[in-house]
Length: 283
Image 1: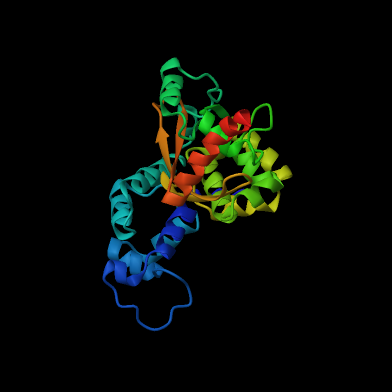
Image 2: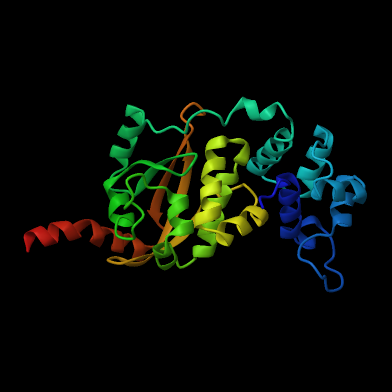
């Protein structure tokens, strides 16, 4: 069962992520649930508790721009989260689905984008389309991800590897969070209104099962644009990698993920990994 109330899920998870102190409220007695109460958010946004309840439960999916602005302020949304909130409300419009999401997922890499990857080498970097298919990558990315098995299939897909390949659980010490991020990336935008993502979601429902369907119900479609991920590499050991997600132009419908060492130990380990082939040849 796939959640059809993405707006309500997003509002609820954001409300539960905010502490009373962040909005200037006293913590008060012990709370049964994390974050803010509906009554507190409603009071800050100057809407009724009943209306906020309807939004969270999916019984109203078209709040006015004024209500959206008030809720965004009450929930301390960032600029990216505000844009995501607007996308979610537009998705309830029957005409929205025809505005995008029907084109074939991009698989062609523009020469200038490939040149950027060449300039980035040996930094690990990969180009993905909206399905998470690997379209191109640097040699540094191959050294990093090849040994863990991500690049084994003829058409590698990051989401499919993370959610269905047992090797991913060994490769990512914080696998649960990585899996959340992959599902969030698939849900970003129209999700099942995009027939190509819907087909992948159907496949993952069968091949990944509860690992995927539970996250569809609970993880908002707003992946992080940056962060730190841990990787257990068979040759380089435990690594801490800072990632940046760079969205290309809308016509490209692609994103580039660049991985950088998050500490000096990881930087040294990556340097050793790059020189290993030369050492083997010298021996």
